[in-house]
Image 1 (cartoon, helix red, strand yellow):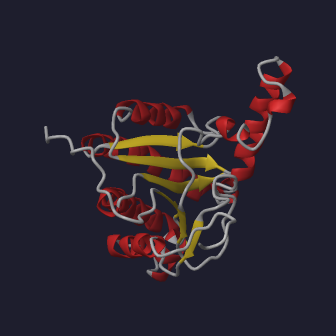
Image 2 (cartoon, rainbow, N blue to C red):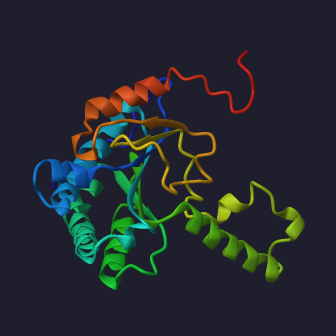
Length: 246
């Protein structure tokens, strides 16, 4: 068995600690090549590995990727079924490599609608990588920002109703403890590929002060070099969080 990766992320001055990516353009990439949309999704899955492995080189400790949204169920039954099969195959194929390379995997989103076999694999991957600390990979699967906030509010309301939480104690610091991402820092940089300039219901609460990059590159063509360029450019931004420059 290969030796486990040294679980120390390189310190890169000015690097974003947490990068979130809306991986868009798989279908168009495939269409441009005269292939079915699922061909593009398989190419996109291969790109995920390269970007995950590049994170330590650029000082990125947390990477969150948008794999399947609550709205994606509106796609054709063939495409949805193919995506679910791809997710199962990805987990089965990548578990050992992720574990060896020091990647801890978490899933966010509502698992209720997902099939039992996929959920079992998700739970297994989380357990298998739970001790890793080099890169924290979060996969948003059946995820929507509004849905997440609604589910969090339900849990918060239940605690208020049961007396565990007083209504006067509810503020903007309270709700994040009920979100799917409660163990993660907020994203510093959000990247969307494929030329679309919208956030598509992704990490709505968490990205209030994130920097955004909307790029034309289709996801299967998104390279380690381009990722590194965007991370470096982030370091040149003046992040004031509502204040003024000194």
